Amino acid sequence: MGESTVWTMRRTMGSYTRPMGSHDATMLPVSLDPDPTIEAYKKDVDRTLLRENLRLTTSERVNKMIAALRFADAVRRSRPVARPK
Amino acid sequence: MTDFEHLLDALTNSRVEFIVIGGFAATAHGSAHVTVDLDIVYRRTPQNIAHLARALQPLNPYLRGAPPGLPFTFDVETIMRGLNFTLATTAGDLDVLGEATGGGTYEALLAHSETRELFQLECRFVDLPTLIHLKRAAGRPKDLERIAELEALWHERREAGGE
Image (tube, rainbow over all chains, first blue to last red; front, side, top):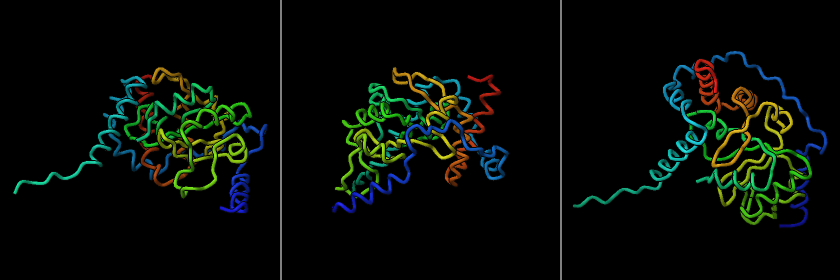
């Protein structure tokens, strides 16, 4: 990779740089009004799962999510077992 | 699979000032969705950038999705020149953000964050209303279902008398 490519990368990254010391302590305004699409999705949210999670500690919630991830990972790696003929 | 404990341990032990946002923060608040990466907003001070570079150096951070062989080193100079980095590390995927969409710098989010104990570490997470704000600000169609869940979660939490 040539020097010019490195320079281009640095220049590109630099264009996103917020100067040091210019810490903006405000957040951009965002409408939090009910959105019809979000409201439509909300009808299908399984609230029993949420209530169950709210009874857990942060560690329990995270461990539950990691267990689900591990299970999904195991399923993804699974291979069909050859059936006896 | 991302080793969340390893990533948080590396950041915390190197005294990086950061706030967890995104799907992992949603999980901490009670979301039933799973997430495959860790998103953090870091404080952009020279000292914290040095801590961040040192924390991640053993995890061989590399730009996620970039072709192998690019001259990329996640060091102080790179972090100073950049802002947001989507990284692949040996402990899994990590998004390191100087600013989240919606104006979410570390300083802006700090007042809207809370400390939670996790993996025997004390980690700072963005609070639920602000997480909803950030998701809405991002305006991504894929987030709409998540926002619906987070808003329902917020409603359920208030009904239950908060945490």
